[in-house]
Length: 114
Image (cartoon, rainbow, N blue to C red; front, side, top):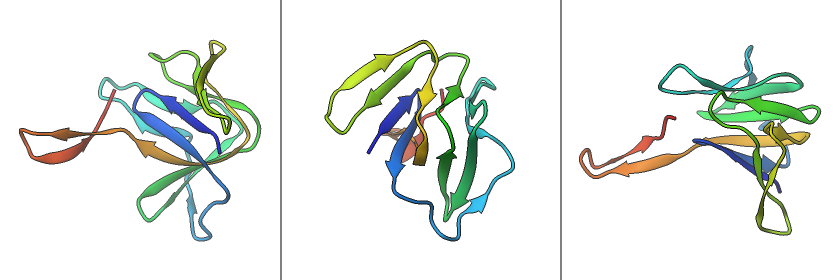
């Protein structure tokens, strides 16, 4: 299972899409607070099911964000490695997660937005 991390977005490899996942008509994985987006350039479809996001990457492709360059990958063998200057996501199916942090002031979990 591959895991990719770009800023506040985590892509975790899964074996298949949920059967009733709804295909979305855009390639934006997440919006940042300054208007930046994490988005696929091509060869990917996004889906949503029960509040969770999924990506079907049809061919190795770029996950783009103006502030993040290069890929960090955790392979089955373990360990992180930085590869290239573009954030290349390998062909596969991924569950999309957003990084969260606990706010002691509000006493609740909040989604991190970069």
